[in-house]
Image 1 (cartoon, rainbow, N blue to C red):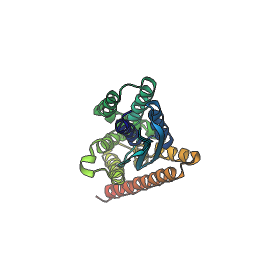
Image 2: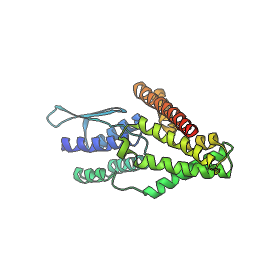
Image 3: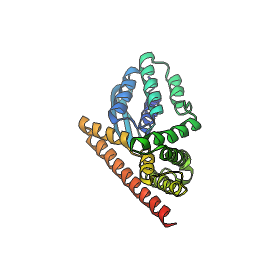
Image 4: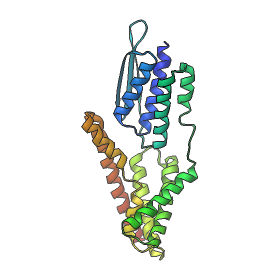
Length: 252
């Protein structure tokens, strides 16, 4: 067994799972099962939202450990599904490590949805949320346009805003609120509040907060509290950005 190659494979899949927003128990169990499938002895896996540590015993009896820091990340269900599928396939078929490593490195290369399809989703979701809160057809149309603007910020904003998720949330919330005010003043929309709330639903950290509660109940208290804090900061960023956008729209 090539201990280094196996650890590199486990770290690659584990880190991709972490970047996709997977639960901590899912990351640890997936990596552990992968190591067991390839004959890893005395495998140990420890994960928190910002770090992944994997250790196993080499053929000479000495422990070998890999550690990697996980950069700030959000939730990518598409990547999560591909990671789960690949991990199950590798555990079931156990191909050579070189072939498995090539498949792991291609996880981020194959995207099912094109940017245009993602932007369409960002536009349609607020258009359906706004009528749910009591808005009319004109408000839904405004929410569609504002959602499209927020989608552009989320998809391409990292080029100017970097990986600061809190700053990106503030900017996107401000864009949503400011766009709502402008469209209502132009006579396209009716209710600034309903349009803004519908668009801000794109930014609500529902999955992160749900995972946080699940991890706390599962015993991963540190990870759960970390995700809870992140969700609270995101909510604060949404409130701050919306307030700035509404203030700017009503002032100028």
